[in-house]
Amino acid sequence: MTASDARSLANHLARLDADALAALLDARQIPPTATWADYFDAAEALLDPAHLTRAIATLTDVEAHAIRTAIASDSPVSESSRSTLSSRALVDTDGRLFAAVADAFRSAEPVPRASIFTGSSETDAASAERAFEAAASLADVLHSAARTPLARIGTGALSATDRRRLVDGGAVAKGEDADHLVAIADAAGLLVGGERTWLVTAEGFEWLRVRTVERWRRVAGRLRVALPASLRSADGGWQPPQEWSGAYPFDPAWPERVASLASLWGQWAILRPDGTPPRWAAALADGGEADMQALQALLPHEVDRVYLQNDLTAIAPGPLEPHLDLRLRTMARRESRAQASTYRFTADTIGAAFAAGETAASLTEFLTGLSLTGVPQPLAYEIERSAARHGLLRVGPDRSGHTRITGDPELLEALAVDQALRPLGLLFDGTHLLSRSGAETTFWMLSDARYPVLAVDVDGSPRALDRHHVGEAPPAPQAASDRYRPLVERLRATLSDDADAAWLERELEQAVRTRAMVVIVVRMPDGSDREVTVEAAGLGGGRLRGRDRAADVERTLPLSSIVSVRPA
Picture 1 (cartoon, one colour):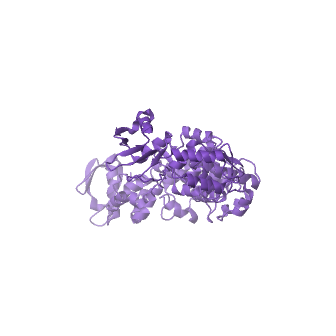
Picture 2 (tube, rainbow, N blue to C red):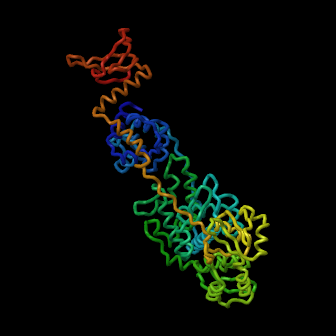
Picture 3 (cartoon, rainbow, N blue to C red):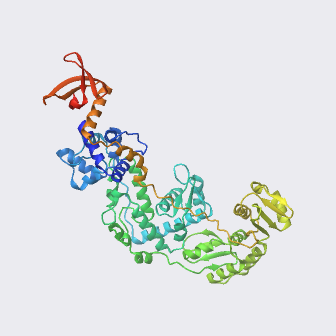
């Protein structure tokens, strides 16, 4: 780093408005807690080799080419890259690389490029089949997360336990698919990661209600928007996927990141194994919309009727329309998913439907309209039996602030001695039980323990509870102007009317700190300039003290008379 570069950059930083300076600091990943005292500190830090190494890692292949060309020709960088490089303080106002930037670039080691699309081409029908399978699997992941939030480990990844749960439940074929689908759902805004869990968002619940082709379209659009800037094309599409691996040639984390990105796009069937899009998705690459009619023609036909069997199963002769599948899952457990899906009714699943607000009449009405074969007698009997048991226990808040459980005396006695319910701290109060736990917590613990429980309000009127925990989208990141405001204000407060004098004093301070030999140009009373070579020893009271080695004397020079300073 040369002194002239640092001074030039400091002057440039001082001329930026507050928002532009904050954006530059953000682009260079400077901590908002930086302890810089003035713009000269900022310039020196930005040209420090360690900071520049991180900056070089953010260069795109286009920017790296512009820098390489500028170094080879000893000329300013191209006009097309000048703005982006200037916004990161890598070139001066004329577009010339700072010397420290050129040195850092020369010493940087490019990351080896890896092939990420090595498969063969496939037919549009095969791609559509993968798209259908991905959408169906993602729907199963969301259904599972809606019932029980998915655990998230410290790295942000899906826990091994829930990965296995999704595999065992038939949502995915292998654990790697679960990781990819959670990443896709996160990018599409269907899942949101908290500190310890993945939760389905309101958008995710709404996505479960739309048809498969619309599910695919929405996610594909969000994945395209989420592409890193260097992979996007000016028309809103993307750069050729075969070039993706070289998009950030100096970023050591890029190979792993781009390989993961390629896997996600391949799993969602936006790209085929060879990196080309199916014909029905080709327009996406150019910023357009996929041909949804062409995709729909290749997908299995969705049905709106099922066969209800005497063995308490429902057989859908094809993929069930999503809004029907969503409701059917509230009263039956899906056992298999293929071209024909199987759902099984049990006392527990029907009881869960009642706990969620269904009634015998609403269940019968829904199933009658859904069935091609009517409601079989065994299923009708199970609904009637569950309805008769439902509500034998009633749970709700009482006016004292506790949770009150009333109902069948024998069941109340069973609750009081049930070791699984000890966390509720149940105590008899006359003919009913009280708990200090909340009414909803108590209700769901009893429901999970398979007790016939009904939720009521403080007046005893039935109410439906929604167990789904809707994940809220994380707050928008704080704007750079807000995050860097204290640092920017501190820097701007150091602005001086005489920048030359401020820089001169800084150079002298550094010389004193290192006891450096410097050449001082002093303006004499007659207007002439004289050079004095001294070992800088002290600075204070508006004067510089130093030993003149040639004359072997101590000299004291007033700062007002010093014109410039340079290394000896």
